[in-house]
Image (cartoon, rainbow, N blue to C red; front, top):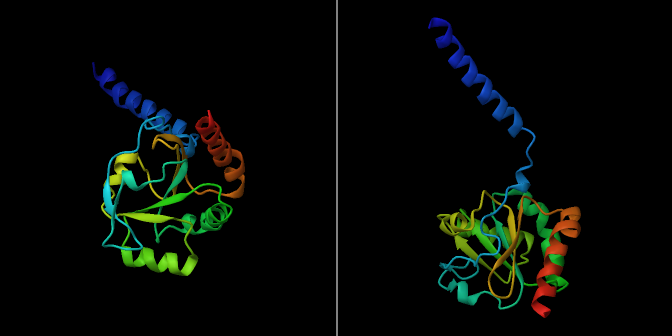
Length: 180
């Protein structure tokens, strides 16, 4: 009986070690979202640009758009900002921001200093909208169709490679679907 008591903790340790070892090789950007093909959650929140103005799901574009989760504290958000600004300037599609768990005054200063790709940016100070969207942290970007349905989720910074190989094909698919 005493040998069995020794093997139980060793066995539990080995199973736990195996699970953790396997986790080292997972790509966090491939985490699936259960919200793909589901409508955006309802919300009513102020925007960074005018804290006295509330917007809701009804105020979002009625065409495909990007929904970008960002924060003034987020260095990767600063890295992807030029790509998003270029996309907005080229009219690729509208971009709406979600300022996630940030202070509005810091978000406004960040937008003033770095430029904003957003038509507007929702203030999600307590992170409730982010929770409803399954956000792990900033930055995250969603491709939303014209009916307000989530079609694609990108976790992490958007660089030129991910823009061309992942985001643009998702946008093209949503736009093609809208034409049909």
